[in-house]
Amino acid sequence: MGTYKTYETERLILSPTGIEDANFIYKLMNTDKWLKFIGDRKIKSVMDAKKYIELKMLPQLERLGYSNYTVSRKEDQCKLGVCGLYDRDGLEGIDIGFAFLPAFEGKGYAYEAANKMKHMAYHEFDLKSLNAITVKENISSQKLLDKLGMELKETKVLENDEEELLVYTLQLENLYNQIT
Figure 1 (cartoon, one colour):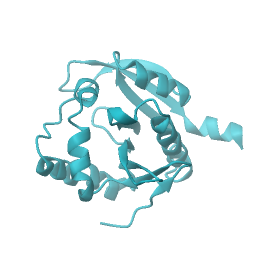
Figure 2 (cartoon, helix red, strand yellow):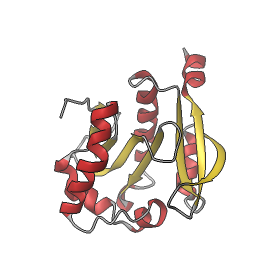
Figure 3 (cartoon, rainbow, N blue to C red):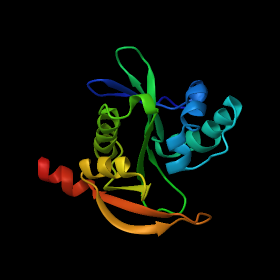
């Protein structure tokens, strides 16, 4: 595997998720909110989490240079959640996503990480736009997407799924060209 950059914000470190994060990924993917709002990925052991990282996260990192990032607090290296840029099946373009352990919700960490990821998408990875998907019941995710400047574009049902998703979009080129 190549060497990939780690990114920092005022309080956080965003590191590409690797095999060493399997315990954390196992714990995160089995939280009630993950299972309810993101879906059961059948991660029933740390070994399952390792395989998921190897098969789903690392290949995209190798192919595109970005993928899933483990978000840790600078002060104590505590792993809080994940944030990333995803090339999802059934969705056009690149999708920004995030999930945090319940103990770390409501503290601004998700916004801080996702805002950094949005900045990286344009300035590091040369993406012109970003998408995001969420289920209708996930109000906190919708509020965060709004805060990031994303706009609800449509609803969509992905292949092999029955749940209708809200699809958000943001034209990064327009956003950052206005600023500079």
